[in-house]
Image (cartoon, rainbow over all chains, first blue to last red):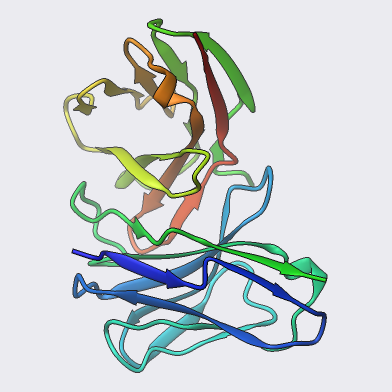
Length: 117
Length: 113
């Protein structure tokens, strides 16, 4: 089982450039999400999806776009990169957004470290 | 308002000692779940343990146990017989019914040989 696969692992961008972080899961999970992790701030939710064709904003959505055309894929697009978007990005999935169960835990990708100069 | 608080930004513990990592939460919903994740220096997020608000017993998973005190709204992670490989960031998170996971800021645990 591959679980959640994120690419690329590392990326350096210049201010104003755009890019897409890829995320794919092979667990048939309904729920997928993108987080950013900054030092001392834990994880902050950027966008999430509860199924193909359905996306919604999280806590810090500005500057990012997402789409969910298939159950498996949930790419995150940076439209015009800014130094404030320098961070580690995690894609995570679970079978449900809201079910309270020890079986419904987020499975994370390995993370993507993005630096914007 | 901060819903998840981890009051220990960093901890040093001697190898083989037990460790308690603190987590307090705030909710008025009677139904919620609490999660602990480990993030080693390699960066991946690893799920450790889950406690449901209606679970009668404290959750345990191998060397990990959750000291769940509902009235005090605390969900401390206990690691027994710590090992060097336990050195990592540890995050507490809470999910209320219908809502997203909320994360604490984390505790950096360093195990000394």
